[in-house]
Image (cartoon, rainbow, N blue to C red; front, side, top):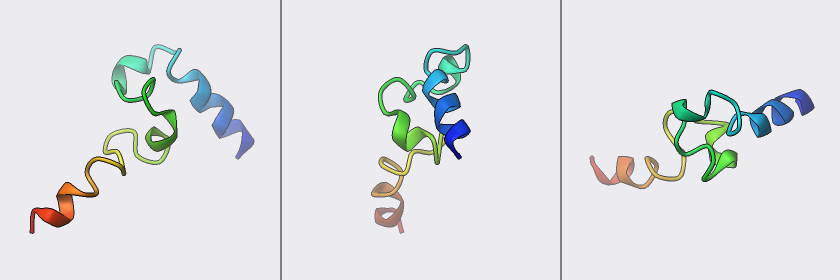
Length: 49
């Protein structure tokens, strides 16, 4: 598990940064959902239906 955290810390600096524009802004929420974002899609999802 410790290894994952170390790798994630380098993600924003790595070439993978362009893949996740939110990585440099919030590396914490990007770890669990690098493509979705549990902070933004959560509120709009339940409001849609």
